[in-house]
Amino acid sequence: MTWQNLSLGVVLAAMTLSSQALAATRPVIYQLMVRTFGNTNETRKTNGTLAENGCGKFNDINDAALTSLKTMGFTHVWLTGVLEQASGTAYPNRPADAPDILKGIAGSPYAIKDYFDVCPDYAVDPDKRLEEFKSLLDRCKSHGLKTIIDFVPNHVARSYQSDVKPELTFGTGDNHDVFFDRDNHFYYLAQHDAGGGPPLKLPTASMPGCNGLFAPETTFGRVTGNNVISWSPSINDWYETVKLNYGHDFTKGRDTSTLPGPDAALTAVPKTWRTMDAILAYWQKMGVNGFRCDMAHMVPMEFWRWAVRQARARQSDVFFSAEAYDNDPAKLTDGHVLDELIKAGFDAVYDDPSYDVLEGIYDGGKWTNDLDPLTFTGSRFHHSLRYAENHDEVRIASPKVWGGVGMKVGKPVSAVLFAMGRGAVMLYSGQEVGEPAAGTEGFGGDDARTTIFDYWSMPEFTKWVNGGKYDGGRLSDDQKSLRDWYGKLIRATQSPAFVSGEFYGLNHANAENPKFGRVGDETASGHWLYAFLRHDSVSGQSFLIVSNFSPTETLRGAHVSLLQNSWEFMGRSDQSAWKFTDRLDSTWSTTVAREALSVSGVPLPDMPPCSAMVIEITK
Image 1 (cartoon, one colour):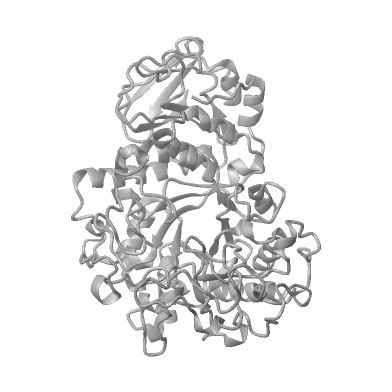
Image 2 (image 1 turned 135 degrees about the vertical axis):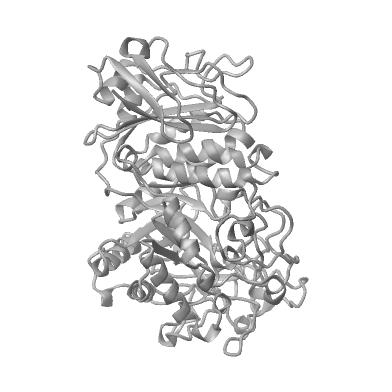
């Protein structure tokens, strides 16, 4: 167990955060990858082609699918990987990309080939792919769902060439003879850089159909997306991508203060800034409501302050979320990158630290108590985007990770993540039916993730799709129950206490409480049980959230102590008796006299392994 020795006063100060009030509703995001979402082809040949394994289409995301998502409680749909990426599939008006610059036959959705186009794989008529995508945006809007797409600002595919707006193709007019120029789109290699000089030598020579070369880069070379300055990038590098230049030489350190400010005129900013602003404006005009910004910490904060301001001038409520990691040495700020992104205008930033703790409970020896220090983050606490799965992370139901517990582990994990803060929350398609991502798919390997590189379908998820009916007709009873449970959780946590209320942690106050979920010979509390309060002072609504993370133990006779400070937090010091009612997945209810709350505490019903309760507190 790792436990912080924190005074109660500090805990109270941190837990009763006084951050600025957020909107009356919060984004509940459903992430789906078009390639796999509607694909019901069950061939699943390893390294199979589109013709063999099939591919989801924009049209597959039909009214039945969107109605189901809206009913479940989602407000936003993140259409992952829709931008045209480098791919091994050829079309009459679009040749296949060289296999040396591809990861997987389908290609990585984060190796963008044309920022102003969408992937032809996803269209019934590839020549009308933009029209079909626009129809999907319109369908989402008609169902009251806002749309988010990827914005990948740090890098593009080596084969980048815009057919839609050729005048805005990255690299046009660049000076190849210098490593860095403020108005170059890319960083260019010098003869003496690592890897032996030209031509560019890719780590693919031994792969089928490859020779380790990329014809356009025989006389010049460019820095990889992960900042590698070498003529011979390794297989572990982002060798299929090239890094974009935002007017800062990243080899000179993190000081980007000489870059333009947020009020700079369009003519005063570096060339890449202008191109990126044109990209955001293009998709905003088409009807996209928001952007999930890939590896946002690798781009100067000055750009974000300017670009978000530009986008909000066009559409005041455009949504920006950031994938960012403060522990990445490539970050371009000496401050805490998540805080800096919020200051730059982001609505939400990835809460990777909480995800790591929760996974660590099963795979890394952590305790639920280890979540407590992560609530000491000021306004970031309520601007975090929380998730139990996304396309980069492993599947909860995989037998290889999360202790091999299976899909039920999503219940305590998601209950805590969805109920902790006021920020956005997200569910990845397949999570709600226990998709395990088992087996080898192709380039993605057998890594407990649903591949983003290969043509594939999800074996459990297709049972919900059920031939395009999206009715779960082939799901097991356990899968149907799990999907229903996620819907209940989403709807329960959209009430005022969660959307605009404050957080008050209870694990510290119960550290010495022997009835607080101790298992076996444990002498301290807080290994498997996590509990906290949410309270909204305007509506007066209060909730107690309790999660049992134990994969095997039913917690019997557990009690949660509520000390007087928690009464004051909820404005209930004068309330003589408190009623507790589960609003998530049971009809359990009990009433406790005020005097007993800090002594014997709230007596909980038996909590099965991997279960949770969202308990409303009333008079």
